[in-house]
Image 1 (cartoon, rainbow, N blue to C red):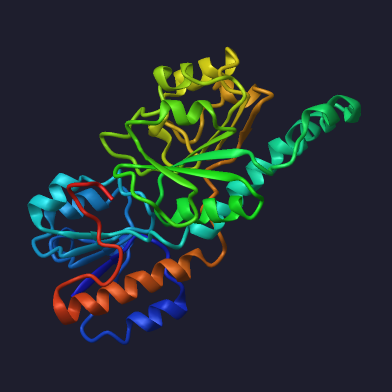
Image 2: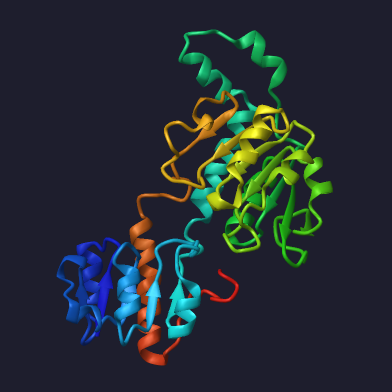
Length: 315
């Protein structure tokens, strides 16, 4: 059996894989045309991944190293009966802490103070009347899965009222209210923070568009730690320019890296981070643990133990 490793594996974890009988770990540099047809499992993804998917005659399972899987050809996986798993669950704490940092950055005037610092300007008298505490503010969170719940949990600790948006509208832990994603405009008009953590699907692509932003009251902060293409970038820029939004904190973008000529870079009310909200130094080990569990389970039962992706739903 051959495992193609397209995501870095530490020496310690390679030793763990070595305990699986008859398993050979293949690195991209070792791939030959013949080997490409004999890959059983893939860990990670990259430029060579689609070629292996197309040519392998025995590919059974791919372990993605991300939570989102919109960059896979899900229809092709389904057609070839290849199982796919993600690493959903390991991002909850880091993304929730990042979102909390964004929220405090704007609420407590830190973002404005940091920009003033680059100009050696003392802006205390200007900022004090504009800053507030989080108590009784409202956050509307699009996506009520593990990450959304972790965000809501932390915001509730600061007495923020949390409203979740999902497809079914059923109650979810840590949300004071949950509504369906086709009944959101009235809810977001009353929000102070709008947070996107939805997966990217056909239904969520450009979900946040001109119609969405034009319904806002102008005082909201928009936060995107979900997927870049969920947001129509032109519509977002227009909303910021025309005061339909008070500001935005953006970690993901339609085009990455964000082009150097994007107007978002120079907007005073925009905070940009380079797709790092889910990152942490132990990421590789935690992702590998999911791979290892799924490999062992698959070899025993032909099934995956954790995070199998519904190829039709896209997550």
